[in-house]
Length: 500
Image (tube, rainbow, N blue to C red):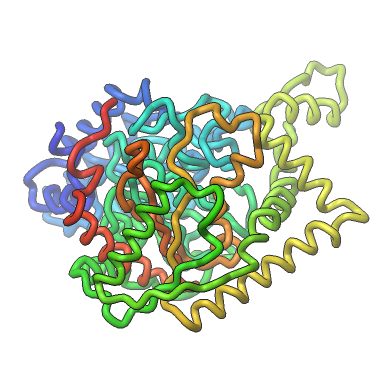
């Protein structure tokens, strides 16, 4: 079992295709691992044992018939509980959807099934993806496998923790303000935010529609590329989907692994450093920049002054969109219903249901967003934030006229203790300081592990940012850095599992 759960997704798929191991054996090994450790980690909200084994048997049947299998056929995956999955409970980490079983699949879910990926279950998350630590789940926090007393990042901490705990070799997250990359950084895994509109949002329970983006999570850059290609592509069911060919991401990752970045121009963003950044994080980041130079890249420092306004702009735009999106949870159509005893009006039932069904962070953001959109304040708050968003997008355009990619630390610090920032929302929001600009602009970004911070021996992430529709650059650079750092320190998640 140990070999099966430690194998990369690429190696697992190859072994299944050759008949060296069955998809059922692989699925069972991961289900056994979940059974052994998830009581401690709490990465999963729902484990679909029956569905996973049925999907694995289908892959084995296809191989037995001599059918050609896809590059991820039979590989297990942990799916963030924000994508609808037909016949499987989907809660978005909220009591208001407790027990809801969708009658349809999200497009991303359908594409995973078409690729022969074995979905193990649904992972824990901050309620409606609102949070930076996976402490805001209505079903309790997830622990970081490196240190179970610490957060695994948010909002997709369950997906990242499942990877780091060897409960799955692949996972899916969503990134609204950094919720794929930030958990990737603090768990030593790879997380990618694709260009907005290149992975379908149909069936993704919305938090902030102009920012939400599903994407791949994995333990290696190549595995992330394989998963990214499987889920990407135009979707006529999604009005924000971009009708453009899927880029050759796997090819970019394989080429990047050779380690030649000659001719590549890399920009270091000056605003992503200074006060508030943990010394060990900056040490590993600076070492990664030197690795890029050693691989042949030209490194220059760039200033993007508008990035300093990204955090306040985000925390007006995202709550405003959330206040609109979450109005649908009214106790009338689906999900939780409280107080419907025949003596109360529909308005009273809605108010009681929303009071009981939403957690404190969701309520905070709904109130903030409703205020920002209210008459008399719209232009002062929401309108101004959208102007800042435009400035940030233009600043990215200017930067990418000079360089091919930008780099920064993914997060200012390593994983902090569970509960440390629970009573300080501003300190919590600062965890997404480096990731939010890419969401506001809609371009592509990746977090790749770049070692452990010396002071606490916890993972650090290197963020790589590429222009919109240039996601292949992420995989070229990420694979090159990964290969170089593996040679230098060894891969933290391929050498030895965190103690659980």
